[in-house]
Length: 96
Image 1 (cartoon, rainbow, N blue to C red):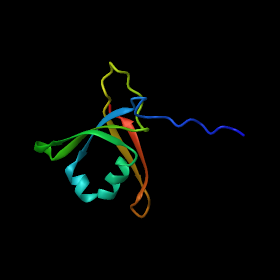
Image 2: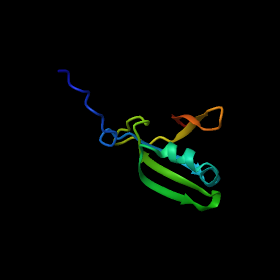
Image 3: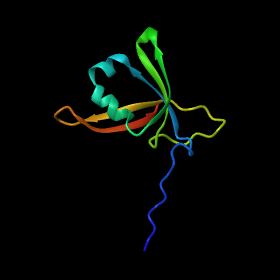
């Protein structure tokens, strides 16, 4: 009998990222935002009053591992839509 692969632990691997979501995107597309945050563990969320957005820091299997001394990278979500306007895919990319 073959063993199943050992699941990765994205928290112990320190797969951390930072990202910002605009308040109007949350208001207009709550399902997309919920899908984007699915599978993450948010460890910090800060409301940014002057531009009505939220800065997040989270663990995600979609993020690259971060060494203890490294700066946590900033990510942006690339959303691919279906023809009917639904979400086909969400991919997190390191922000330039």
